Amino acid sequence: MFWKRKKGSDFITLGLNTPAEPEPEVKSEEIEEQTPAAADVARIEPVGAPVMAEAPRDDASVEEEGFMRRFRRAVQATRESISTRLDEAVRGRRQIDAETLDELEEILIGADIGVQTTMSIIEDVRKQVNRQTLRDVDELKHVIKDRLLSILLEAGRSRGVASETAVAADVRPYVLMVVGVNGTGKTTTIGKLAQRIKAEGNDVLICAADTFRAAASDQLAVWAERAGVPLIQQRQGTDPAAVLFDSLKAAAARNSDVLIVDTAGRLHNKANLMAELEKMKRIAGREVPGAPHETLLVIDAVTGQNGLTQAREFLKAADVTGIVLTKLDGTAKGGIAVAIARELNLPIRYCGIGEKADDLVVFDAKTYVDGLFE
Image (tube, rainbow, N blue to C red; front, side, top):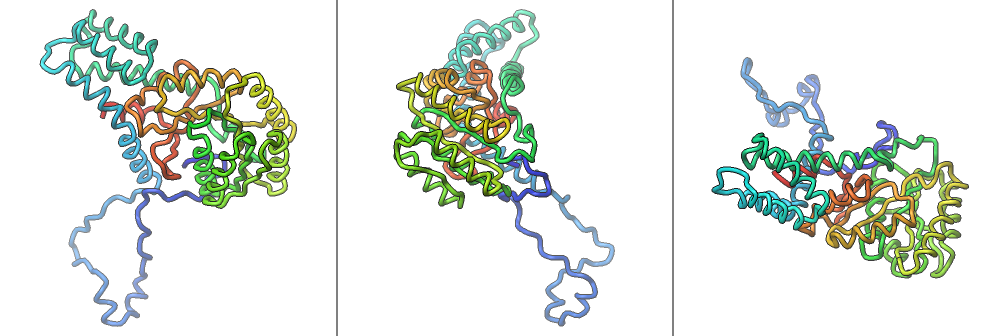
């Protein structure tokens, strides 16, 4: 499931990567009534012949396999940057020595895992080499994987919204605010979120509160029309808080499940940006208990450490609860996910692994780390 706030019986899934619908079962009395020509079509096994049938598989397991395949494809460039180069670095060597550690350091920093994280991993490896508990490349990869996974899981537990289910189902609308620098894929992310959340049976509304950039509203209008989701917008230059207020009233009138709020992405005046976001949060909290329930910061994985610098600035202006990492499939520096988790101490909630609506997926730390090495 992509979005889990509704009860299980209420879900309408996208059906991605699911098998075709099985043929309806034909009862024996119906077969007897068939004409000879129709009856001949039915396949009848000889008495006593073994029937080789695959164990039934539910849609969730099939979809999970499809997700893992796509995720591995998305991090292929990063995998080649880490795992493949690591194999080459130790090829022909009988033991892990100082030169190997130097190459490992270069590999991890080159994948944008971050200097602090890299130094921590190198120190762990060096200690195990000195104790002679680490001897070959498979063990070395295992140590690195454990450290990366530990960092991601710890960030996921630290703060932020672990799941939509943390907010009571009777609180409507669930207000999801999206922030980020222009050009990171913020508008596209909002469109994909709206389309996927709606596809799972939720009534969704989009608030176009980035009134300083006309292109933002135009792009959102395209996505809203594509997804069949209503869009609340006003003319350029309108007070964003006023647009949000109108959107909250519209959501209440429609009894909408989710309100996704676009915000300004400029950073040229941090004081104004902070004041604007604070005003919007006050209005949201006044109209809906606990709103905004989630504030997602969109970061472009391609920008690497520059994106991390921008993220730090936004953290000063917004009470961010989670990260959306876009364009993960377009970079060999996908290790930035680890650097973000360690330095910002925030969970990565979603990641973009393609251009289609279903290519915005829930981030899974284990699948991500496994994808870097398998």
